[in-house]
Amino acid sequence: MSELPKIRPGATGPAAEREVKLIQIRREAEQRGAVAGKGIRPGGSPFPIASPETGYYGIPLLKEPAWTGEIPLYFFVGGAAGAAAVMGAIANYTGADRKLVRNARWIAAAGALISPALLISDLGRPERFLSMMRVFKPQSPMSVGVWTLLGFSGGAAAAAFAGFMHERYGPSLPLRILENAGEAASLLFGLPFSNYTGVLIGATAIPVWNQNVGELPIHFAASGVSAAVGMLELMGHRKSRALQMLGLGAALFECWEGWRVESRRQPGLDPLKHGPSGWITRAGGALSGPVPAVLRLASLFSARKSTDDLRRWAAISSIAGSLITRIAWVHAGHVSVRDWREPLGIESPLQGL
Amino acid sequence: MAITAFLTDSTLCIGCKACEVACKEWNGVGADGVNWSGYSYDNTGALGHSTWRHVKFVECVPEPGFGGNAPELNSWSFSSDVCKHCENAGCLEACPTGALVRTEFGGVYLQPDVCNGCAYCVVACPFGVVQRNPADGRAFKCTFCYDRQKAGLIPACAKACPTESIKFGEIEGLREKAGERMQELQRRGMRDAVFYDASDTSVGGSHAMFIVRGDPRTYNLPPKPEVPTVYLKKGWTSSAIAAGLLLAGSLIAFLSEKRSNGR
Image (cartoon, rainbow over all chains, first blue to last red; front, side, top):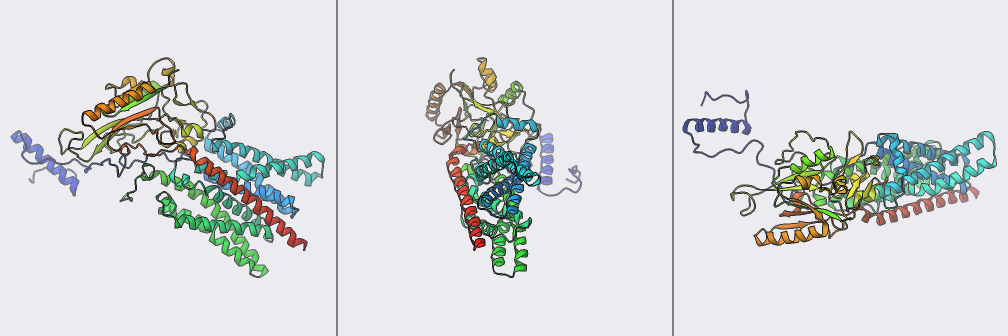
């Protein structure tokens, strides 16, 4: 036995034992022309087995989203811009502070320019975006969304541009018409634009998304509102009661949304609760819900000087929470796809995978 | 034009992958590389942008009388998977550019010159068929050999199949053939044979039908595939509620601020 050739210097363990056994069998076969004992199972055994419990070897049936990092960023920017446009228009119509109206328009206009840039960057080649404008398909949330984006971008950019010219060079009728029309368009398109991304990911084959399709648009709208409020507050509007109300409302809704996800026992929601994707979701949820809600409530009952600080922190938390929430949902979609059980209707718990 | 379909009978499949090769040759699809998945003789694991036919190698726990030559050996089934060409196709509905179209033969065809690579079809397919090619940026899937069908030829995979496991023909005729085949298999004692065409779901049937042995889930055939358009109503209702809440919330907030300022 001692003259047996070594497989790998210092190799031990079951693999090395199998190799030694294999060499013995070969030698026996060479010397006697037959092997008396049992054979061996080749390396890597036991073989993976396909079964109704593991599906096809546990290989995911669905495909992971192929979107790049621009898409969650677009969800964030678009949501904030849409909500800002709506808030700006309503503020204008109700005769609120001019400065707030102007800043809301700037947020909307910036979002209107950044959003298409992010989408085009995801497509890889700029001219591919033109294909989006070949048709309008009501049954495709992507098509509806692109046309909404185009309407919104035009409106928001026009309103901001006309408003700027108006302030710089004085009033004129064409500018007035452009400003009002742009504002009306950005309000009209901003309403769906701030939340359609919830329908976009909800109406897919991905379990964690389609199981939440009834809540996602409202959740995304609340997230957009809290980000827009946060941005306006960081631009100096920390005394506005209206923004405080909107921010508080959005934060309270986000608290409810977090509770809804946490309290429901549904295997499809696992990516939102377990593992890294679960913690990203929780981090985003905490920063959009309880943290700004507590800060805003505290600011209502505190001295004037600390009110300002509290609202600034609430704003920062809301913006970060909104961004993380969008990233969390897209990431949860990836994790959801990797779990082969849901689309196959397998209810066995995950074991060692 | 006749509406056509595939019937893939896995009881006849010998796992030779001739369909995969014929598909790649005819359609000029890139190689997948010599990478073994570690799962039997499967090398790609699933359909994808460069795998329009995919032979599944299903090794199951030993079960007397089910495949294999000896009762202690694992049973071994093969099945050639392909785009289902759904009657209600999720990818076709989701495509924002109109690149995905229904052909006169009933198949779902992706026009590569129109596709802009938005990848929305990827998440809309309940069978995980369409995939974005990372090098190219656009999505790709089985064309149902639209060019060959136009010229009166049968798809390359069906042509190459040496055992007629992949049958191609007019859809109603194939359904009848499938029924006859199922009866024959039952008669011969293959009571675990299952016919799969997803016709009892919102997908509404497929132009790629399958006969498999045992649980279709071991072939990654989902028991309840849903075309994602079924979620649209709920989604847009929620979107309308969200828009209403945003509008009402802004009005209430700014009007109440105005009132308190005016006081």
